[in-house]
Image (cartoon, rainbow, N blue to C red):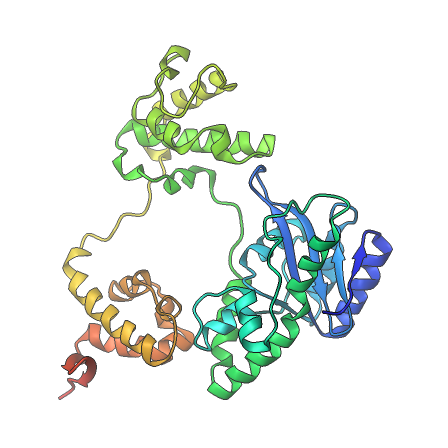
Length: 380
């Protein structure tokens, strides 16, 4: 691996961004922590061009300067960049206009979701040192070993991108990968509606009546406290305690005794918690936000869904694609129910969506041929 530089001065970052824009292609990775804060805390940004590798210290410079590179026509190469894009959106206000994700691209070349280290070893015959994965990236000065580890995460990304593009062009799948990468890049990253936060609770389906209103208000209150104090919501009030209080609402401080996973002696928000519970109990039905209901006819079409999934699984094997990439049960269910589905557009529709639609419409049928399924045209 070539040498790298540490950037902790704003002028140095400005010049680096100039280089990224002029280079036309650069690699990027981030290191962050989110275990103890409401929002992830960015601790390091690694970037590389063909000529240089730089580790940028976001604790010392205004990292939003990267926005200039993001707005340019330069392509940003990442690996499994979903979380990186999330934190770049938070810190810079936007994500790169053009990206190439090596993990997504590899999916279209026969790989399952895999690590950067495995791809680099398989395709470039380079072994990466992954011994510093659990380091504290906010330490300053950052030890040399950790710096080398961080630099290695971007050192080979551009070469990996070139290899994957060549393979995908040969297989005629580059446009598929580009479509999927753009879907990742343009994903909605806005904060969830506070009134629907309780939909994420496991066990929400067991709530009924006023308990649902209490859950809605407690989840919203918990989020507000977590955001104000910059801590993970579940450290304010655990999901278990929230569900317990929704099912058996406390009327006073004494009612908090015996609530699972809540210690009244250490809990510091008793008054506000009780106010949120009362608000939930008094919530008008018109203000209660309920999760989307499963379609009433879902059991009636379960057999069709199973049949389509069997065909989808076989097609995924034939195309050397992980089935989750080609389509999920939710995708198939949406298609069967005539709802918006990933299978009704783009490369998925071309590859398998039309076939599945013909099975659903009855214009085609599946026949067992030995150990294989065969799609048979039923048109007269």
